Length: 255
Image (tube, rainbow, N blue to C red; front, side, top):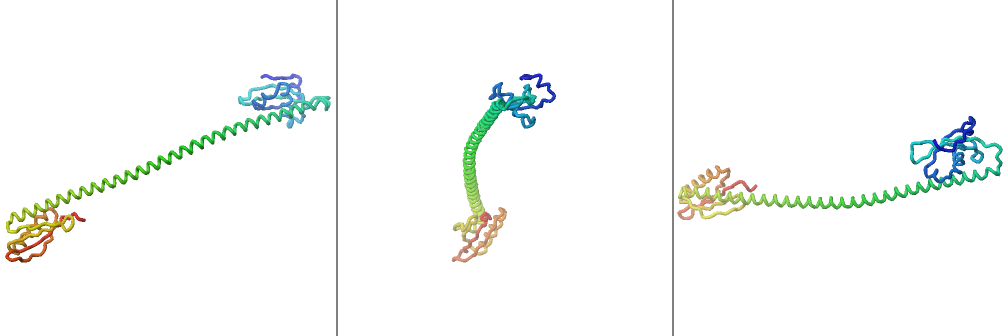
């Protein structure tokens, strides 16, 4: 312990005992001569002894908080003290209390100003980061939409290319079937081809007779059926000594 301990007051059983805690800044603002009056003033409500009429003995002790100073205090009423002599200590105590209040207000104001400044900086940083994040999200969304459009166009192009390749292959295969049937029979001759719609091949041909034309269409029907296609027979009419006929190979790829 350290402090100003008057053994007579300290050991007086009638003296009021109490503990006073002062903030470090408050305690440092008080001189050693003023400190007893401040301690007595702090205990005045509990002791009932006016600070101006108090005799004080005190010791400083450890409080566990570096921001506080803790005092163990003994206070007793001073005997035979005139009013003329008590005015100065009371005034000093009042001045000290005013100083403590001003210091406390200044400390709180500085703490609040620091907190407000920190909050303003935090809000500014958050606002900037939010704006940047929204910009990134917008760019990412635009890139995603563009990627989807590119993917759709590529798939459409691939589908068109695949269909074109299938169409080319189908027509080539169909013409090969027609050539094999007509050449093998030797009695029907193709006049021309046309495609009224995709994956349909119309054949116009002539034969030496209606019977031969019908036989040629039957042979074609059998040949295209092996490929999973269908032959749609047309009409047969006579032109002089020859029979003219038509038929259509449906390769089933239009739908």
